[in-house]
Length: 187
Image (tube, rainbow, N blue to C red):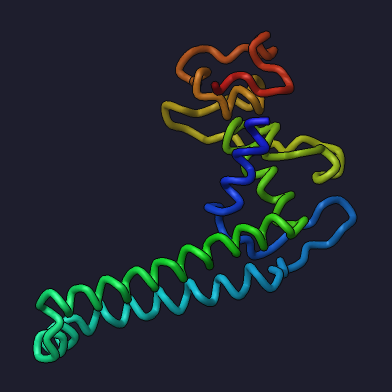
């Protein structure tokens, strides 16, 4: 239940998805946001561009505001109303972008995998199933040389990604009982 709530929250705050990668026989394709998500992104970009332009032109803007009388009580009231309006538009765009992402199945699948990998960062969560690599678990190349070098004959994927097991001590040739398919090695 907590993972569902975390997925919904990350749907609002999560990263922008650009491409869906290949899964098994299905070829990769570019992510197509729906109308709510794309329109909200346009609003975000417009507000960000306006603030950026105002920031870089601030010496000119401050002089113009001073000459037009915005640095008194009435001017500050007008500026606060304008800032509140921009904030309301930004908050609505943020909300509608989250609703648009929740209604998109591709983004929901991405967020499920993202939250799972964020909560349990190990090899098993990075590769949801072994069919993605033709039935084989990916084998990263061991490091060559240095104090953290991993010997090829006693390398294990869970040990290499687990912070509790460093290569300074002897790496066991068989995985320890704490290393299981659910990756409890990082908690």
